Image (cartoon, rainbow, N blue to C red; front, top):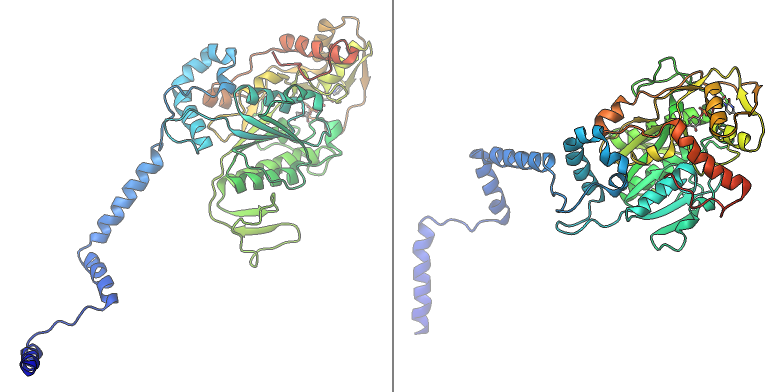
Length: 462
Ligand SMILES: O=c1ccn([C@@H]2O[C@H](COP(=O)(O)OP(=O)(O)O[C@H]3OC[C@@H](O)[C@H](O)[C@H]3O)[C@@H](O)[C@H]2O)c(=O)[nH]1
């Protein structure tokens, strides 16, 4: 029985050896055969075309819509002027589509169907004049705000009314030092803005680099508050955003003018992300940089993958309002404080140089939006310093005297914004004239100078 079995087994093996016998497939052959089949039959082409179409679809169409009930960011919609603005109304469809989707995407972490959660926002210079008004708006709309300020020109009193609010934090910190915070958006305002102060404090380049580094590291949207001073002593009047300016690169104002111009350059470089990127950024030890190829004493540079960071640039023209430093040195605060103290108004030079003065509230509306900019943010009304002195006399003291003082070096002769771009793309324009805005500032200054109220803090734009 056993031998039969053995024989049979042998018997079966013989014919097999003589006839066709496919070898068992090797593992690598099992992989390459379908690939060769795909290549031969041109299936790959169809697969690639399919991928391209899908990619195009996902890129062009927003991946999610704002949930029903999601309205304009309150920073805009809470302002009565903008709701009633006929200009905005005419732009509303564009504005609604773009702004709502953009704002929705800016958080980027909210699943469909859930209500918008407040953003985590850092405001550098948030205890300053403009910064503190911005902080009020952000807190008002439900965001959590971290103010970073070195109190060089900022004041605790400007934000004291938020102390105790769990959505508010205050850090004493100079932005020239690195800082790591987990946030969704960065509003970078930190920089002394009065010529009297900024000549001693060139923070623009290093501070901006640090904050851009932070934005890149944590994936936050970044807004740079730039200045009308990027136009220098302009040869084109009024100034449009496409004008490149006329700046003395080695003058006493250049640490501010050129500093802000460089800040704009860095912001756009981070936005484009395509070329060389500086690496001296906030604790940015992981920017994917090939350090062996590019290095320098302070900055490491490298070709890095495109990042296309979300950035905004606002070029802010002369701004005034409550909470300005009383002895700030700028013309509006000087004139108002002088008139209130019964001192003569100090007009520099012949007083024929011009500026455009914007009430601080108008600025708040532009801190968000879809477009990178830069945008001129200013009131196109143009005043000589003598005309401004007259408005201050009318508002505070018709008997206020005027004294002439030598003008400062490199003082721009004229300045006035062309705000067509902001009007067309954002539906924005300032609403408060100098005659209406000045009394609001005077009220705040009067209270602070003569101490007939609780110091600072609660003074508002409205
Ligand atoms: O007491 C003064 C102070 C200033 N001035 C004159 O008023 C004009 C405006 O001077 P300011 O110091 O207020 O402001 P500047 O326009 O020179 O710079 C400002 O520009 C825009 C912002 O970015 C900054 O806030 C600031 O740099 C200048 O011509 C200046 O000479 C006076 O006539 N009297």
